[in-house]
Image 1 (spheres, helix red, strand yellow):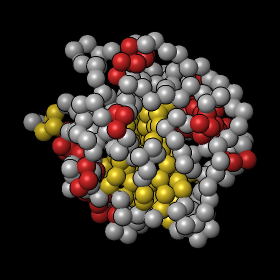
Image 2: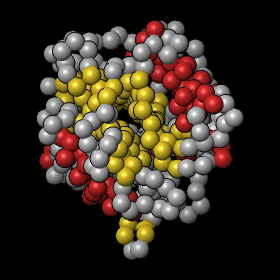
Image 3: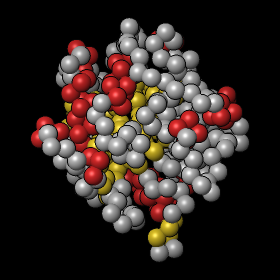
Image 4: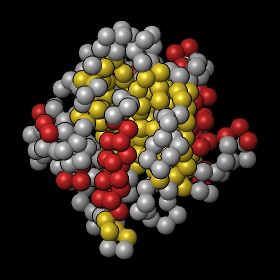
Length: 337
């Protein structure tokens, strides 16, 4: 079982499950060499799927760099060996560099990836190297297993565009079909990045509208697909905007289990069935926003699994700090029913 203490990384990375008080510490985690890899479980019955989600902060904090931020993430991926990787806030050139670096390793030699643009013409994402694509900001899904396009996602194709968005932003949900090893079948991982929780447009709260639309899209997929969602939802677990995703065991009306919702070590200030470790840690980065309360629990990044198709253990989620983002790297493991 993949434990929160991340036993396989104990000698590789400083892997933490931070409480609110720990955010006051100034901690730096430089890139570290990988010396071993965790055990892989590839049985068909109860097939395990490891997901890594990361808001890469490729523009605002990393200024489009394809150097140390990429190297650091690739090293962590090699240590953790996720099957599915989802990235928010990443330049096309950065995800290309990440994929290229991973493909030099046997475990990811057949890596597949798909991106969808979220912003156009971001100066820090520009590059003169044609190998890195254009200057667009994106979110991406990468898989060690074969990927294909779903029949339809929301308004068609492999992604759905939210109807309520900030000007010049293209908030979307991206979904891909992934074929599992042996005869375990197909799963459909999705990723999204929603607008900040307080912003409005024409009197409508943008995040609330996007959360509701996201739930509709995922629910429509759930009947014919085994759906996973990993992304930055920009809202806390106890917010009723998430009621359409959380299942009845978490006081919601949705079809999904969040991989960190059962761990009682992160219950402070949250309902008993909506726990969650901190995933947004601006105090580690010195990235405080004036007038915004950064104290207390700040879980903004989630991994949801369709409850009827996946089992989620109480210790199935971990977070890892990064020197190159104001978000934690979130790692979860689920099993097929």
